[in-house]
Length: 147
Image 1 (spheres, one colour):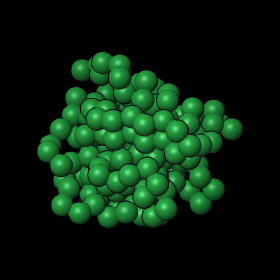
Image 2 (cartoon, one colour):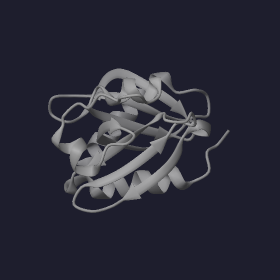
Image 3 (cartoon, helix red, strand yellow):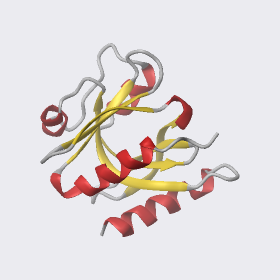
Image 4 (cartoon, helix red, strand yellow):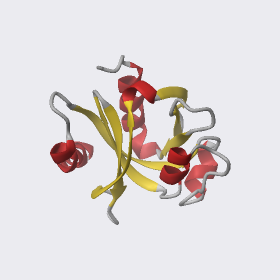
């Protein structure tokens, strides 16, 4: 099932890819403010960032999303009612400004992403069924970005 969703997400972003840009990983996530805990982000469907950076606040305010990591950037898409990738691009962050600040794997997995500006970033949470997706995204984020 995840392979189908990933293929659909890659198809959604194909029209906006730059020359040489390749999608690497796509997965559904719950996006919360950078300081959100694992359970807090899952319990609250749409968390509003307080005092964080502008991009992190904008992305965190929309809750359930689909992310596509490419060799150049991370693209945040809306998520459909059934959990698939939506057509709306909510935001994007260049790989050069994106860093993996924290990884916690468990029943609820958490990836904390920093966007380079102090206080700007998001927490991505994944339920147990998406743990493999969290691991794949974390592994891809640890690879050096292509400039």
